[in-house]
Image (cartoon, rainbow, N blue to C red; front, side, top):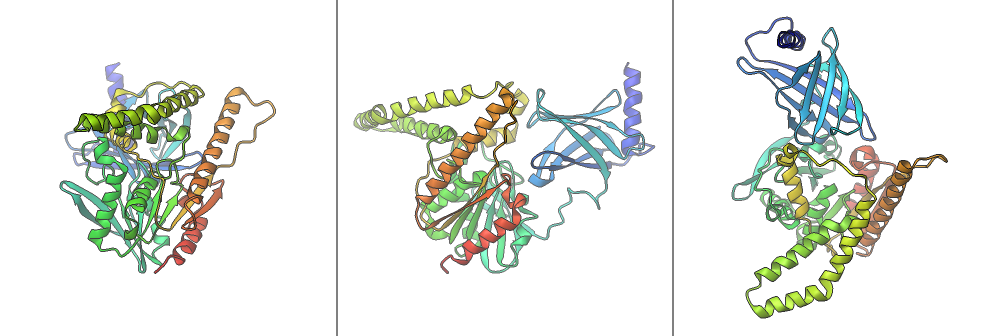
Length: 441
């Protein structure tokens, strides 16, 4: 068996790296598209050094994220690799001529199987090569913390793009050039992600206000005069942090499907983390209070209002979780990855915002509800019910922004996806231009 495995490995290597195995380093590039509601382009790079084995990386082009895979495995003529950061895996058979790898992708051990075919690419045809015209610099926002700043150029009103959780500034590499004819466009890669510095993943280092202060530090060092901040997804909390504490430093805020409870508080099953984080802060305030009378006052407030609210919160959360299917626990390998721990720290740092004191535009994506067939099974009915609750939550979030008054403009896009600056680029660009044109100069 060992000899057969060696033969298979040599055969695969000969296809991967040519008919012979030269002493110098060799790199082979493969790329493919994961199908789905939001197709994902991925680039697999396999490299063989002089003395080591094969190393591999997977680059998610549309998220500008790179994953170290470690050495791929070869078994029974198949190429196999795993992504420790999220538990995904791939198995594929290479064609005899070495031009394609046909296989399946799984997001988890028990996850759905998705077809994925890799085609051989070159440096000239690879999607992973950044061909965007931009400048990259690093700005220190506090001792030991440098953030990547991307400057796509342009003239006019300064515009700063902030990405969603897990992404970095390069997620806007195809969107930003559409803006530079009217604005000077920058992007910031949040601490903990991409090539920006990674402090210890604890809530204090990733609170919404701390992340908001990072943005303000970059704005100050770049000497940007009242920029418009544009945030996608989790970046809504950075926008709200700045808009509630330092509205005088910006001209306006644009939320790209970023109006969740961490950006504008609405009590719902989705606000659990914000509520729980607030309770944790109150508990810490009690333990940190320096005098007995201060502790008594804080405890009295907690007993009177806090605990009843959180008891109901827990009951609501229990009901919500009871409607979800059981899932296998994530692997220890995944729990220990940097990306998982940093993302958790960001969530643990979510805060409660109810007032924003500068002009804003909130663009929401409202998914089109599923139409149930007459003979739909229980799983389909449960999914449709969750979609209905999700739409209700979006309506509540939109109303919360409307209650801010004349400073707030709300736009709704139907049938797009969470990355609305891609799925509905024309609509988003139009709405942004109209909003910015009306801002005070």
